Length: 121
Image (cartoon, rainbow, N blue to C red):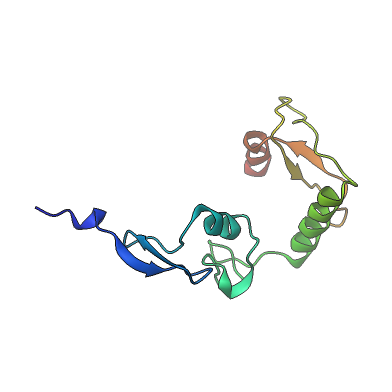
């Protein structure tokens, strides 16, 4: 008996257009293409997660949030701001948390666990 779920099919990557052999549910050819999509390096309709300018839950993101996020990311890449350990548990893998999106450089550095905990409250 042939297991159709494991059969490889000739497909075309939705991001780069390269042909590859993959399972029927694969849309991207490589981990590199996957990371470009997941890390938001590909924006707009070319991103396979594109939902007409909306998040997965259907709500639009705030333009103030987007601007704040871009400014913080730019400051991190240029070296103006450096990531710090989590304020609560000292974990070195952190995310920036803003109390006020109009102040993009005033950031609390929190690990993912504590960042989600703050948003759940």
